[in-house]
Structures are given as structure tokens and as C-alpha cells.
Length: 291
Image (cartoon, rainbow, N blue to C red; front, side, top):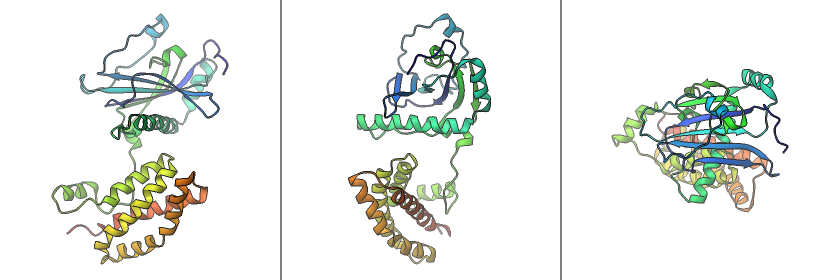
């Protein structure tokens, strides 16, 4: 890739997250399949040992807000994902910032960040390295800046988003979350293994890890069929179990294919549809309440 022209601006998305993500602070160049740089990820954890910086006068004058940390001693990670391709000059950059689909930019950035965290979890063999959602951020910004600015988490201009706009809509749910939560804590309800397995399959599918999703779904489906049998006197649950038994062959085929390599489009669609049916069956268990 050619060197950017003087005065070029770079697009970025910045998240402030109230915990240490896992990867060490620093700059990471993220490359595509052809080896071309696509993004630069800049991580800085406040509350971690400070790293030394050398700032030019221009960078020192760059605008930067104080992180929205509620407690000075709590770890807070500032993750800045910078697009590798520059925008030529102020006018084009400001026009992009004014017209950009900010929510789409945030979703795309979170997807890239989660790929980094997934890699970190694998190489560290640490299941507690967790992926993130935009709704968990205490600050979200999309902006532009010169290369030396954005490399230090600074910017020339930025727009802020409300993280609450990214809170996920509840999937088909039998009870209000607080009612179910109280029932679990009080021992009036049980957490099923199928519920946790289904959540893992959903996360893998939503993150594009279709092989993992197919393998998780196979176990989640069998667990749901076994565990929900105790509620089969419920007509809705019974009918959903009957339908899920008919899905076994398709799920087994997708899982077997996942062991050999990637799934085809038809199998991915089947995994998505059947996973939704497992979620609906689990929700139907408490559709009429717990009493």
C-alpha cells in the first residue's frame, strides 16, 4: 500500500470498555487474506502500568476527551480501531463523518474487535477472555484524525453515540427477565444445560463461526430434547419437540460437515433456522409462568 498523502485523515471507531480486554496495550496491524493492512487496533488500558509516549506538538494539541470512567482505580480499556485506507484531506474526511452510518460503523468495528479477542482467547487458552458488544461500552465515538493522532487514541473531529441504542432485543422470551431471574435464585426454576449450549451456538453463529455453531447446535439440540421431555405435557412444548426431532438429521449433517471443513450456504441457513427453533422451544417451557 502506498504511503498516505500529507494531510490525509483516517477513520476510526473508539470504544471505552470498563474492564481489561486481555491483549496487551499497543498497536496491532490487522491484515486481510492478501496481506494488505485493513485496520490498526490501538489498545490502552487505564489502571494498567502506563506506557511511555513521545508526542509531537501536533499530537499534543489534538483534541481528546477524558475517559468516562466512574472510578479512577477501575480498569478501563480504550480500543480504537483505525481504517488503514486514508481519506484525502479535511473536506472529504469531514463529509464522510457527517454522512456516515454511525451505527453500522460501530457494528463493523465490534465485529473486528471480537475477532481479535477470539484469537486472544485461543492463543492464551483462557475461556475468560470475553467478546464484547457495543451496548457494554461506556463511551462510543466515530471520528477522523491524522495518522499520528489516531495512533495515540486522539482525533481531529468525532461524533458520539449512545451505547444503549445497541442493547439487543430479547429473543422469543417466555417470562420477563427479572421474573425468571428471581425464580432461578429462589429455586423455583432450573437452568437447563440446553440453555447455555444454545447461547454458545448463538454467539458462534452471530460471530460468523459457522463450523463451531453447527457443532454446538448438535449438542444443544440433543440436550433440549432430553431436558424438555419433563415439560412435554405442555402442548406447545410437545409440538416443538416433535419438530425438533425431525431436525436431527439436518443438524447431524451440518455438524459432520463442520468436522471436515466449511459449511455450504444451505447448511448455514439450516443451522440458523433450527437454532431459532431450539430457542423457541426453550422459551415455550415457561410461557405460561412458573407456578
